[in-house]
Amino acid sequence: MPPSAAKALRELGANLALARLRRKESLKAWAQRLQVSVPTLMRMERGDAKVGVGVYATALWLIGRHGAMAELAAPKEDLGALELEIQTAAKRHARQKTKPESIHE
Image (cartoon, rainbow, N blue to C red; front, side, top):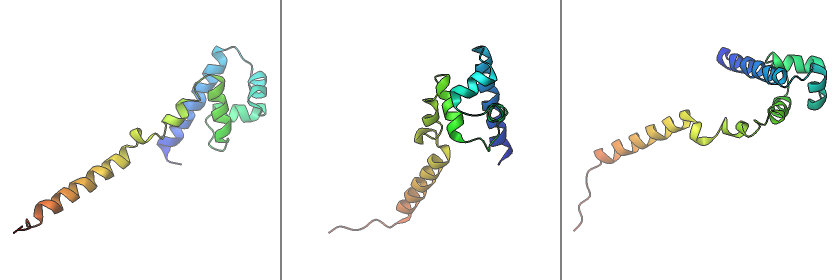
């Protein structure tokens, strides 16, 4: 896993742990609500990539943030695809500029 992705996952886990603590929920109670074991919850709160995405999604649901998941990969946020589209359009424009104009009789 790229270091920046691992860091983001650790931050997500830490934020979810903080959300649990702010709600004054115990590890055991929160684990029951997530339908996971306490050790799995602890791993999730550390940002363990081996914890299933469904557990993270359910934790986000518990704090009312599950809607944000869809936005993570929304097309409008995909800057890599946008850059490719711009490059393709620029190449197409450059090719059109170099073509001789056709003569219409």
